[in-house]
Length: 496
Image (cartoon, rainbow, N blue to C red; front, side, top):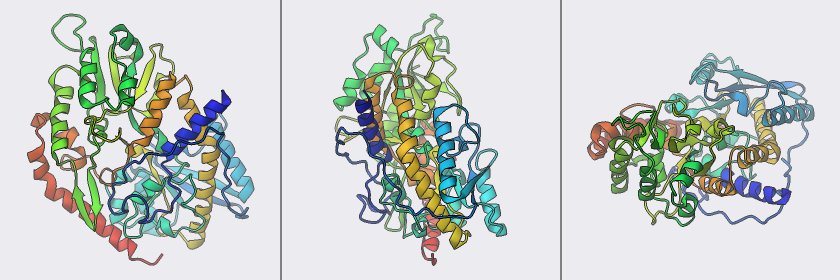
């Protein structure tokens, strides 16, 4: 049993981390300027227990130095994925606490956590420190999305390619993510296994297995395996579960629904699920996506799913579904993987599957990573000695998580508390292999004029006919993203 578990963990670690054991340079599978690293199949790992890896760092005496970490903090996500204030008996929390304790002893250092108070407030604090030259923070766990590119255009972050003591060839660094955000030899922020959040905020679907059995639903796992889990297959499956249970001629939360979803950040996942990206940076220019025949066909189809036929129950923005899972009146629901903990005590069993493909010709199943997955950065005005020390700690923390905390977190997803069957573990691997980051999304803003959010703001009003709306906002989007590219160019030209 232990051997099988370790094998599954090894597979998930390989796929989730998307590590290619390469420094983020132009030699990576996609051009760093393209913003479009396509998922590629990973070789199956041998069925062996994953070996512990050494970080290769010298046991440096930091003479009691305290690394001041500025963290995002709001009601939905916070510093708890990187920092533990005390032992609580909760496994991952206590592992984080003991990890920090061991590193404090090893390097004769400390950690001081300072957090914001609401969406984006931490980045306001960071900017204030940089502008005042007060150097209040040494490292930041931030959500770049929260500033709509201001981190770049205002020049607030150090070049992570110039940080000592970091070895991007090590498997705890998320090389494809770091490569995506490297443009012109400047990398503002990074991702690694230090950020458990980079696992939690992948978008996925769960389905009610009791309802599936009651109405003899098709084998959804089999459809996924066969490459036949498509938009049409999804529609056919959920259509059987939208029922006016009380016969009053209206669909309310008292009735049965085929699908439940937020119509905002979960809805935009569909654009990524068919293999599209909102924006790519190619040869110094911003190239807009979401503007071809496949996307327009998707939009018309999605309008029918969300608005056209009582198929989808709308979940409020940042809210839980008003229909309890155990009432067996929602067949399929859009979630983040982080939401699985909310279903831990449910009686009605569920399965986990990826978002469907456009058609059977599409190569793989894709999803996108929500903004809350976050990144690590160093303030641009950090002193060189501080930069070196932060690099040392980033490497040590990331390695420690790779060895101990990530496997335990994945175990908590894989065991039968969260993933209720072996097939769901297989599906998690599929979801992991298809995670996508979009530079357009990262530097976007939740505005009606932004191309990334077109499925949120304009799907209903256009009846799903988005072509003219896309054309009308093209100019403002090119201007927005060109400004970010110009900011990159300025930062890349500096001496680091």
